[in-house]
Length: 376
Image (cartoon, rainbow, N blue to C red; front, side, top):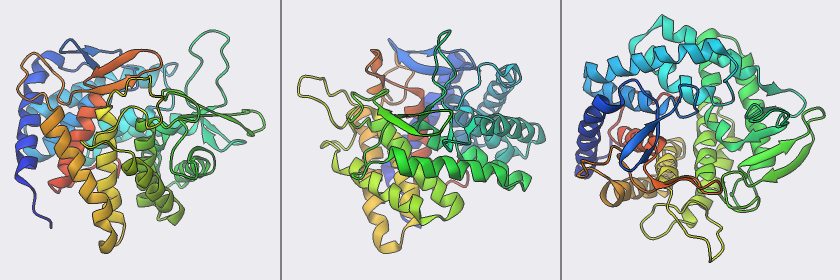
């Protein structure tokens, strides 16, 4: 086992202590972005609902501190109304119930949590479009809108819920659908150079490819860094669950594109292809997601190749800790500064984001040799 650098232990302790302080303010709420130092709490149906309890479970696994466990369980229970209410569910079921119910089942062997996660998996497979071989993204945002043909790269990180459901139930259908969706990612999302579309539109009736869209990136043919990170990590996880070398090769291609476009401090701008007149805000969340994915990728390749992915992941996490951490800022609830949520809509730019915090903590957990990575 590799030596754990001293800064990793320092970062872990600071993240743990600050999260304990945040429990008093956030409790069983569902934070997304920090505005003026305070995490704004979203409704339980919002796609980020799993990341706060997921971070609590990650910290509980190492510490055994029941304050983390109790708050995470309260968050999971609050999601029952969303799961049973049905109408607000979309493709992000994996983000929400992998980090709550799957986590609780893995750590506590909770039968109630297992049933919740299996219900969520069933709803997720119900979004599969057979003709296009993709998991549909959102429901209509406004009356009359038709986005039945939309799939997004983020969903690569939702498929682990389906791999887990197949293992847990013994039913291969969940895995079949996960693999079919990821095969579509290979065919239509990942470009030859390793960059990635955020949104791909299909004809929902015939399954035919229509076009790639910019989504949260700058333009259709730009390279949104968080989408690149979702692809890197999601493809690596699909290789982990299936052993299909096509997923591994694509993950490598995406990883090399991501790494070749990093600035000097190893933390990406929000899009890798921006005109000169557009501000190059950082997206620390993209760096944290990619770093955790790169650490898994390093474990999946041969020993001679592992350093290609592990070393930059460690540099990314160390830079996030030293240059982006809000450890000494008592008026800031976020752990990691300078995230960019949705630049095209002008939302949550240059602020801490809960998923950036979560993946930073998960990356540290990987470096520390944790037994519990909930996507796996």
